[in-house]
Length: 122
Image (cartoon, rainbow, N blue to C red; front, side, top):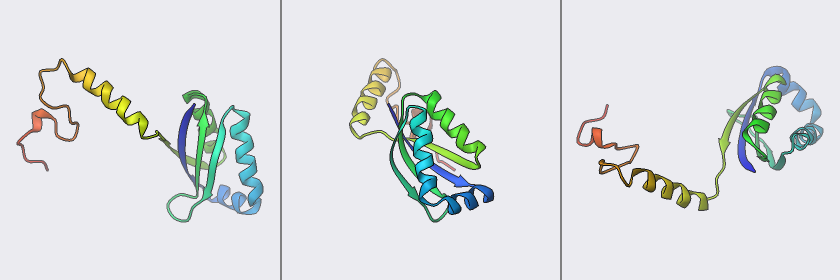
């Protein structure tokens, strides 16, 4: 299952519906995600740039996209972030090391690629 952090912004109409629905709106969101085979791990109302934060697990990218498209149609612009446990970073680093082990390049640091070493950044 993919674990995602969904940051959602409500348009004015959706914001008014969210306020009127109160806790029932949160239950409806859980039901919608569950109906697609997902599972909500947490929901929060936010004050600031985003209106809602949801941590949910989805069986695959297509189902996650289906939920986000449904939310968008309902007036919620959704920013999606993959949530990885720290243990996944070691596996990712091993894949990077393997991919670049036969490389002639001395570094595979995307922030400081070899072609820019010593050059002034703007």
